[in-house]
Amino acid sequence: MKKRSGKSVLCIGSDLINLNLRCSLLRKHGWDVVSSSSGHDGVFRFAKGNFQAVVLDLNDDGAEAALIAAELKRQRPGIRIIMLITNMEGLAPRATEQADAVILKSQEETILPDRLRDLILPM
Image 1: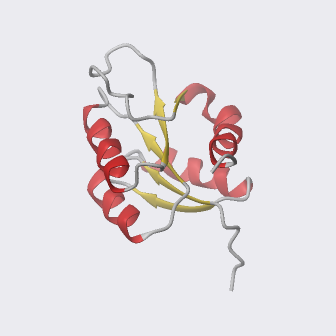
Image 2 (image 1 turned 90 degrees about the vertical axis):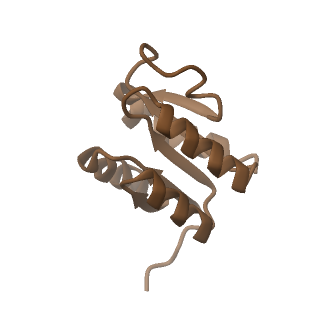
């Protein structure tokens, strides 16, 4: 049986290749990772799990991800949410409003593990 690190993160994203790469990256940095390829499933898994943070991949204009983030914060106001974006152009108004951190996908590999750790330590 695998020993759990006590650092648990939920990753939500519809691009399965990037979602799997993201989960592998976080596992290499000691995180217990649960993934979800849809917002609906992600909200369901979040309600059943004990996560310290959520990494939410904003696809398209971010409107759906904004709704998902708002629901997660409604369920647990203290949850830390990191949103990944391609760029700020074309995002729906206030799409990143619920985020505790916003990271460009092009910088994800170098920034995400440290930013996630920094958000969790104060908890």
